[in-house]
Amino acid sequence: EILSNLDKSLDRVEAELVVPPLGFRGPQGRILMATVKGDVHDIGKNIVSVVLGCNNYEIIDLGVMVPPERIIETAIKEKVDVIGLSGLITPSLDEMVYVSQAMEEKGFEIPLMIGGATTSRAHSAVKIAPNYSNTVVHVNDASRAVTVVGNLLQQDSRVYKEQIREEYEKFREQFLGRSKQKEYLSLEEARKNKFKINWDKTEIVKPNQLGIQVFEDIDLSALERYIDWTPFFRSWDLHGKYPEILTDKVVGNQASELFNDAQNLLQKVFKENLLKAKAIFGLFPANTVNEDDIEVVAEECLHERCQEVSHKDPDSIQPDISNASLSTHHAKHDLASQESTKHQFITLRQQLKKRDGIPNLALADFIAPKASGKQDYIGCFCVSAGFGTETLAKQFEAHHDDYNSIMIKALADRLAEALAEQLHEQVRQKYWGYASEEKLSNEELIAESYKGIRPAPGYPACPDHLEKKTIWELLDVEKNIGVKLTESLAMWPAASVSGYYFGNKEAKYFGLGKLTEDQLKDYANRRGISENDARKWLSPNLTEV
Image (cartoon, rainbow, N blue to C red; front, top):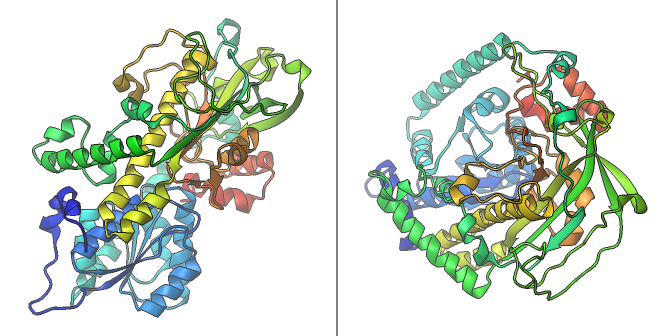
């Protein structure tokens, strides 16, 4: 049974319903759904599963972090008609390839659907489809899934499957052709064309408080004004910018009802403390070394735990993210007296040939080189608003309330992003203090109108998920706030965010793009891993794709 609430937010897919034949009593088909090994995100998968279930398909949902062997075994045992794979982080793309190869080895003759935020038609056509003799199709939203599955399982599906195959082959040829037409610089040439900052004339602000800060029992209601609602609607396959989407002629009614339901559950979360949020960040001396690496100096000192602290001093440097207990570690400013350890963030550089005057960027460009003699600084962080989410979701599911099971996960995601936004604001204004006079509206924060940047491993400027390991080592994240990394380096709880703080006014966001073999080899050497391992982690960014 799917609660009537679900229909309210998914009304717009009714036009896509596949009507079963007259007198048909059983399900239209059996579909296996799984979030692949190492990935913990399942909001999109769950929405697709519910929509397909509403259309009389039997869904076998294996959940998250599902290894290929279990997918194959279950598909054989349950005699499924379609397999649907989902993933959010880029390592999941390779896991999908492994599943397609396993399906081919076992002689499967059923369609494979691919979906999730990190997936694309290009990856499905170029990387997955060549491994599997049967149909591979990328599905980018829940409403389209109904039509695709209906076409795949109709009595005469041969024409549709052949059409998909031809389209993907043509797309693959065009994609690879375009890739070959692009010009790339060697890594040496790209480094010569780096973004150049005059460090002699650049003001570098020393953080007011160096070291690591840990926050627990954060007041979630204080995060509400920092929520960016636009991605929330996108996760429900309702596209438009908040608040305009609420009055949109096409999806306005559904968006408004969804928003009201979200507000009701959010207030319940605040009132009953249903979720718990935690945060940690650190500010450290840093300099660029070896062209593209950032050397970070962290002092080794004991944690100072302070429970049930109430910060009422208006001049206190503590932020407003908690009015309950805080767990803090205050690093001393005199780092020379501390025993220090060094860590390195390994950054990657753009190699696509640019027009004259346009640099090939790397994040290391925004930190002063050691050779400059200038001491610079960097920050890193991890926040989570997901503690308690899985328990709540399972409680909703036990009462056949798929709608609120999905809703609580979507809200936890929004709260985690809001916490990241608020914490960064506090760092800029107080802990680092390079923007102490900053006063930005929520709209300006969402537009990233602040000084400095907050890039995250796995995103366009720094797609290397291995950098999370360095953040975890530097901050001792798992010990301090309990956020863990899976083998594919997804964060658990899923509603977690991690990244860096760059304070230079010249720092900007950018997309890395494709890399050539010389940077792959250089990266593997700097990282201390094999080229095969490097290829695994950077495969979406290699020019050979």
